[in-house]
Image (cartoon, rainbow, N blue to C red; front, top):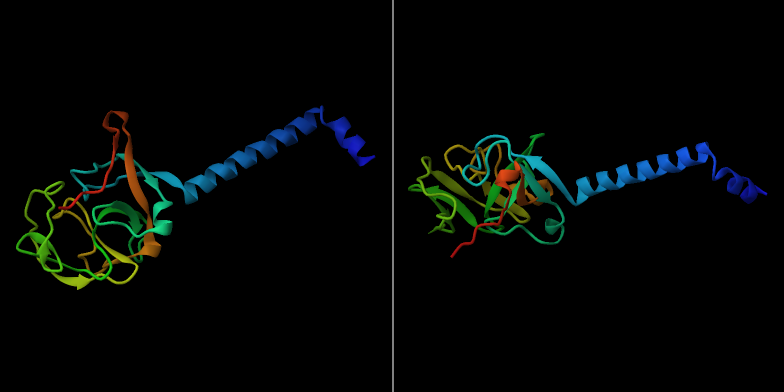
Length: 187
């Protein structure tokens, strides 16, 4: 009898409204889940990644890769600094177990200068005595080496993987600056 009653209501306006409402809620929930766990657009704020990323560009950030693997040197990531509420975009420079320092205007990994000519062709003004990157952490620096608050700063330090949101894959807006973003390749 209950089945007959439901069958009789299927053509009514009330049933169609309920059906549309459930469908709408399902679409919203799926969209939110994708944004929270798979990918999302993020806006660049500031000049710390110039010339690679510019102020007010929108990036496509993919979140799945780092569920299974650690970032690689050169990846551009979105992360949260400890104690900060806003996300930051930076380049991964140091990996777990490496000693990262800055001396004579160059980034050194375990005492060996890093070839950064792909994205930085200037001198870094301030030296950084260095630190060893911990397990499940990364050392990040903005491409605008002299205008970036990053892992060289005491209040930031190395970034735990739990604070890494995802990997920048593309700049999607403005449309005339659309481009795929690839991590740097080091010799």
